[in-house]
Each structure stands twice: as C-alpha cells, then as structure tokens.
Image (cartoon, rainbow, N blue to C red; front, side, top):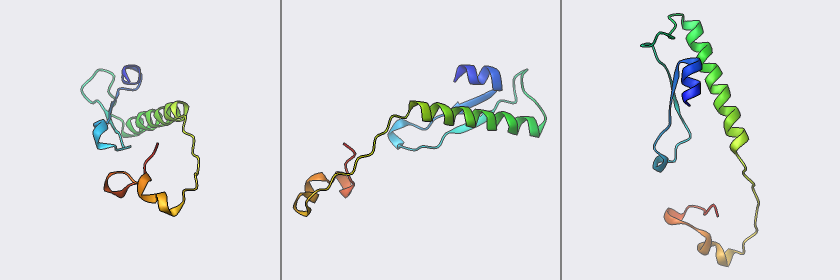
Length: 88
C-alpha cells in the first residue's frame, strides 16, 4: 500500500475486519507535492489503483467451492449463528 501511495498518490483505507465488508476507500491525497489538480488525472490514478488492487485480490484468492449434499435431518447441524450457513 505504501508503494501505491508513493507512485499514485492514492491512500487505500480498508474497513475493520470485524465488519466483514468487501468495500475499500480510495482517496487521492491533495496535500502532497505529487498531487495533481487535473480531475482527469485524479480519476486515472484512482482507476489504476482500483485495477491493481483487483489484480492483487485475484492473485491472492485461493478459493475452492465444493457443493456437499446433506440429508435434511442434518440441516440444523450445519447452521451457524443466526441460522447462517457455515463456511467450513
């Protein structure tokens, strides 16, 4: 993230992990010498950072989805708190 900031002048803010949100906040820092006043250049930098973060997320994701048939009598055993489906 430090390298992204140094190159693009864009700060990346992640939500608290306990919130379990997938959205992040990108902010072009207007208070540095690397700041640009051009709205088009700001948008380009934000878009470039977004693309880079999506690329990093795809590379880091190692998610495998497997569907397991569970008999109806066992459904209550695989429900988590608030009757949500368990992920493991």
